[in-house]
Image (cartoon, rainbow, N blue to C red; front, top):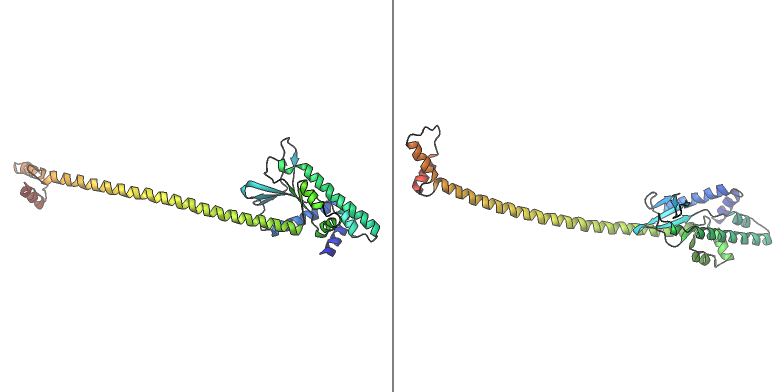
Length: 264
């Protein structure tokens, strides 16, 4: 892997734009392997503004649960590293190594001044992830200056390589899985509560229907009593009118008339 990295940086010598594109390609591969989904858990080349209207375009914005964010920058120059890795002269190699460390420190300082965490459109932690696409490039710099990472972190910059960034992003992906599980549990609880409330309402409605049916039965029985029960009930009264000579085409059921006469 070290030899391949050296060959790649050697091929990119003097071509800063191509080198930047290659670094973005490595970052893209890391993102694809992280388990995060583009457009949902992370966004590339987002355009943001600060309070003064100044525009910023971080390479990647990683979304965290609770509407938090991580900013990833991949615009690290490795020209000095390439020169150092391919230098055979020890003295000149040492000089290139110092230039490489200085280049990383300069980029750390530039990132710190951007204050991504102050952008009102995102809620970022107090640091930005500075992506170094070649593992040996960072290892070489740390061997030359073991305080590099700590000094960068004090400025709000965390230096990451493909392996450390992948580990970080997989932790983020796991946080999202836990967040989704928690949301599912809360949604189940919400739906269960709504279902229970609806069942209570349905039960109350059924009881209401039962009371209404009972009242209807009482009203029905009262009406029936008036029709054919007691002295002067309606069945006997209308039957008497018919006997007196009222012209009618229909007749009441014989058993109803009999019952009314007997009841009287």
